[in-house]
Image 1 (cartoon, rainbow, N blue to C red):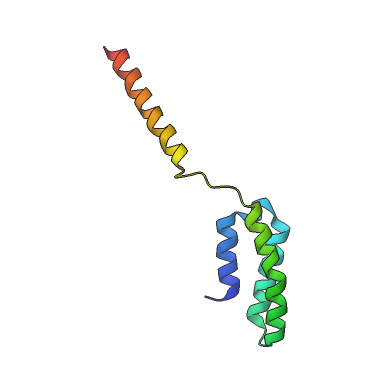
Image 2: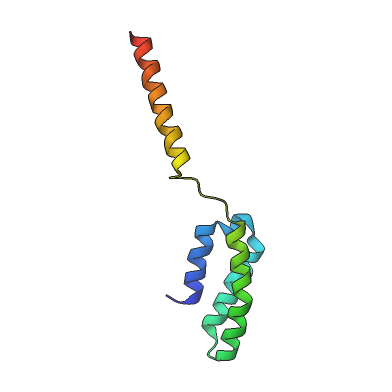
Length: 91
């Protein structure tokens, strides 16, 4: 997997096109430029520019709450309440 593919995958996971489309576009362009050059110095400079952009995008990413312990507890509580309501309605 090349740099552009890796960055594209991470940007998708971060929902970067929704939270910061301009920065996501710059990150894709830098990653593509890294893949297209053979000059080690150019790769280093481009990578140095890409790193803080990706760091900022990670900070801006929406927080995933799916699978959170609090959500699990709330879901179990809702199921118990639904079961109790069903029993009281049918009893």
